[in-house]
Image (tube, rainbow, N blue to C red; front, side, top):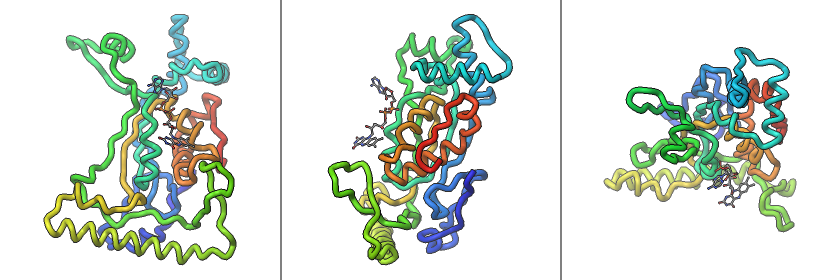
Length: 277
Ligand SMILES: Cc1cc2nc3c(=O)[nH]c(=O)nc-3n(C[C@H](O)[C@H](O)[C@H](O)COP(=O)(O)OP(=O)(O)OC[C@H]3O[C@@H](n4cnc5c(N)ncnc54)[C@H](O)[C@@H]3O)c2cc1C
């Protein structure tokens, strides 16, 4: 598993009190010592075993340990679109990512429902509850609020700039000519970000609320969120965001998520290869 890269670029320019603290076992994403994904929580029950037990309930059968046959059953279920057993296994991730990455990540809304319900003090399964009350099954995102928290000078500057392709496909980028001065572009971007932060902080000093002052901040500002999602939701996210047509930056987050759940993906026989494998 990749460990977090040493402090670099924007992070190096931060005053000491703004240096990010990375959770233990965080997987670095954008090689700047700021962006990461960490696994915060997962079920006590073996997620892969839960998939097969959820499927075997159809035959009123349960197992206590996971074997090779179960791996094959998992693969069969997934490949034939029997995805509901994958919605019983949950993970919670902590992401620190630029705003523009979260815009893409927050699109993933389905595939989770990690909630406990009680009726008259008795536990009620999620399925029963959903049938009765038709609640949504959306996965859960909770994000730092820019209304309450003042942003620190943490922003993402790509190490290497990229160009649009000449053809019509907008979902990719390509290298710039060899003569392109990446360092100059990076320092221009850094200066622009610092200027935006100067405007932001001076507006706050004039008494304007953070919820308004933030409007001048760029999309590469780092923020943080918790994501609780089922194994199905993870697989769907990886299927889309490990692909070469996904933007490089969210691909790096997909690689981090894949690294954090690799043991489970291997056991259910669905380790997603994708970019960077
Ligand atoms: C390369 C790429 C480019 C993209 N470009 C854009 C863009 O330009 N603009 C933009 O807005 N988005 C864009 N997206 C986001 C895309 O449209 C999806 O919103 C995103 O990929 C999340 O996928 P999803 O909706 O399948 O995920 P989820 O919301 O997690 O849904 C998972 C699955 O649940 C099912 N589902 C979800 N909701 C419903 C429903 N209401 N009814 C029935 N079934 C449902 C579907 O099978 C769906 O695939 C892009 C995504 C990629 C990968």
